[in-house]
Image (cartoon, rainbow, N blue to C red; front, top):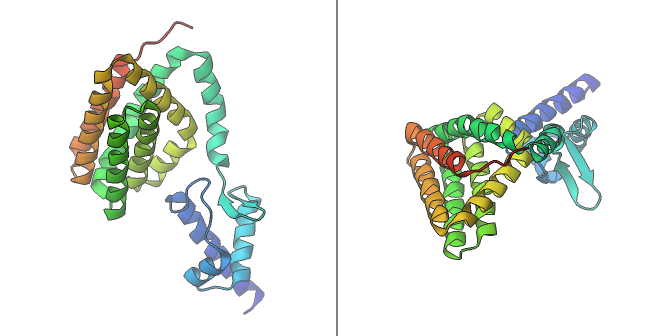
Length: 236
């Protein structure tokens, strides 16, 4: 194989790996398959895989952990979340803007999750809903909030829209903190709130799993509206 052909194969593999990063096949902090596995998957030599990964690493998209393997970087996400996280910490009233943003973004992701979610997506969503239900039955509010956040992640992944997925993940640290803080806080207000939140998540998940996009969006927006109506903001 000539030098130009070899470079072409490296470029081709690199583009395939980039696509896997974009569509969520390899999410942030995920470990990449071994060189041998990738070489078999793409029908190229391990040297080609190694060079493609080195190029991705040079751009900060993946990183090596000695003795552990190659992992997807969360660099793109942290670049946005840090200033926003600090802004929210300093100005509590800004949280209402996040809730308004969540209403638009997550309404759209729920819509497309219902439209495009495949069998694996549906299985993941059902499993996380079950996890949320178990946490509620155990009255474990911390576990409820954790399952809540993971469920929102799963819905974003099921949307199969690269821009939604990466807009969601690029600020996910901020949103996850927001969902956890507000979810835990709301659940501490009164016992009935946890039950209402669970019912809302069931409505969203049922609409998604039954592939009813308009109902999924409406249910998600109703959920966000409920959260907005219950959150009290302290003056700065």
